Length: 450
Image (cartoon, rainbow, N blue to C red):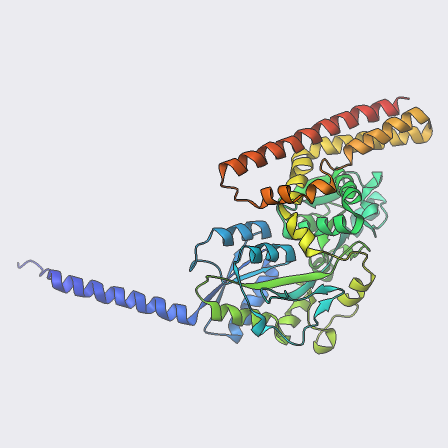
């Protein structure tokens, strides 16, 4: 029986070349058709709705969602080489876009901005003046609470940040860290800018002292409120509103110390399918794209005025009215410059020291209760000292605003000298917080025994 004939080397090479040509041709067609990769921290309810609607309106383009929290998203874009970057960055934190712009990682897109979008929300520009990113929705920060938990535990519905600092809220608040969530970072910055550095950190430390847990991602807080794990927690408005309109037993309230700022969208420099990326951004700003925000499981505030949109739900929050009564004039430059300082300070003194902070907070509340029954000057002085130690930041406003410190936190973390400096400094903050909390516990116990 004759052996099967083997192809010649020339024939094999020809076939390989043809195969390579077919692959290259297929890749070229795919690139022409375009896959738009969107890096975002938004939940699948929102991204899924936009993917379905956009692909239906643009059958030649596929939308690929790369879900990462905002901080991880920034790092991903920074570390991706040109030609391999996602096309679109889409998130709620305007200071995150400032960081990307500062690193020259964004392309101008003012040519596709929707002219019907107002220039400002309150005094805040909706679009970046250089056109490097555009407002796609509006976001406010407030308190989400579970009505059934409040009834069962006889807690009053919170309306201000101060309400979550009360002794009865101990163990009933859910939080996450700003280093894990861009929206939480904006909430923290809103409080710091609305109340001032010292009072703002006092609020954050006391609220965290009342925490039942520190969740891994920002959606861990609304999930915990939805299922009754937490009585309340600070969240971005669309988490609270989407749960409310989806019939969970929850309510959402905007405190006066809130801010209405744009949730932005941007085109990343050095991506493969730039034109297709622009089409998605343009779609998200269109009337059809804006009306998707009213879906119950999305519940976001659009940038287009309500008189230009259909299907506005009855009683839906009006962002212009919220911005008008807000006490916070949010300064994105202040937030951008101390972005990593605030995250690190929170983690070193709160996230990594939560048990110590909770112990100090509990000891203070117990001493307060005892002194209420038996008031005395010595006990009160000891208690005041305990509060000062437990609920004051280990970094002053002047130190946080220092150009030297800001430069250190903005420097390349892969540089061993920079890394060593940061580790030493962060270790000092952590150690100082631990010592403060331990001393606060001792002083509070001493105050209660007077």
